[in-house]
Image (tube, rainbow, N blue to C red; front, side, top):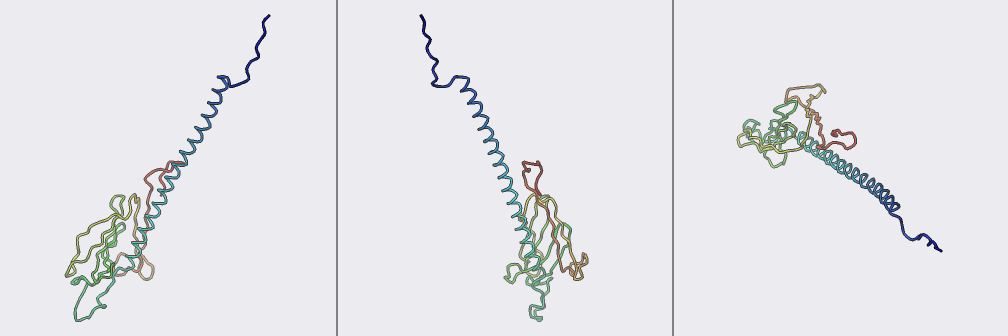
Length: 196
């Protein structure tokens, strides 16, 4: 007479372990995939914030400096000195070049008594600025450009006179409009486009 032994109820079968492992792998894979997407989104949004801050900084610098264009004028000094913007490094000529993508003017930016020649230009996709002391005798210094912003896709200066009409005459300029677009270097992970 044979007696059957009861089947042990302790432990898991190989099939049960494989199913549990597959479910666990599926869940962990989903978590890591979601985590990876979140990390990519976070990095992209960080870049967007940096681009926005760069644009704000560039606009702030340009606004502050353009407001000083033409300062100081010859009447600030004793007329016996006979200083003009053409013969003195202490008198600013104001606006010199009014271009759609470049602007040149003179102003005493540092308030150190020496006028600076300031130039803004778009060089490819780089917004550049040069600010150099005017040379003794009122001559124009050679420009040395520094980067204000990169990945600039558009830059447009517009100029208005005191009545609000567009002008191209440097002595008539009372208002300068600045429009520029900056793109991110990487693409948005959702729509695969660069953010402007």
